Length: 262
Figure (tube, rainbow, N blue to C red):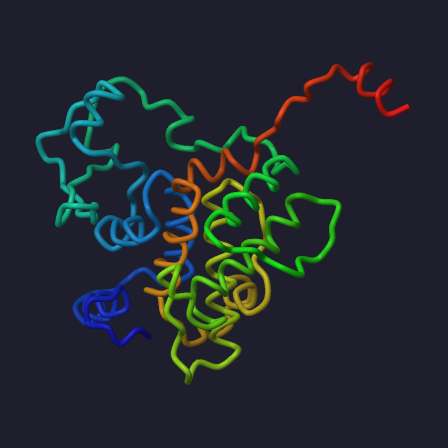
């Protein structure tokens, strides 16, 4: 657990001392369903309204969806850059035209990751000074993306040491390998779900989610902030999801490509 009194771990513990809180496995599932907002904010919403479906600000509900707040609408608090907080409202607290399914489930009909997408991801990482060496070879861009996410999870959680230029501090020295692996598994699985990928949980996380094994020690705060930081590299989860599926058209028709390679 993160010892910072302002961390999500501290909030989780404080709320838990007064009422029941969402178990970690359920919280992971909740955050995976909200790629439209930062993972940390999705976790905050989960503690305020576990039944939330899709949230927006009052202005966005009116301007983007033509919906108005109900008289009894309950404001949900999220963090916002350059402001203390922002208020958002669940779709159930609004009325008006139906919300397009594509807004609630942006990757429902999306395809699989592509090699063009992988190339773009690696270009972004290179520009940020992150050159991931030694990635395993595979013929599947989806499998390759998992390898990339696994490495980024370890880096941004601080389990590979400090990266001052990236603003990454090394994790505590008393963390054992089991905790670092579990946190990395959580980060990878969270991001994969938020990108609309059907990527199975692995390792200790699989044992916890599927077989009811005991929850290992972890910093919820570190997991959520690592997800935020990785997604931010690509402009957020929605932009990241589009990037990994990029399919750059060839400059030549198929017949011309064949003749050029002959």
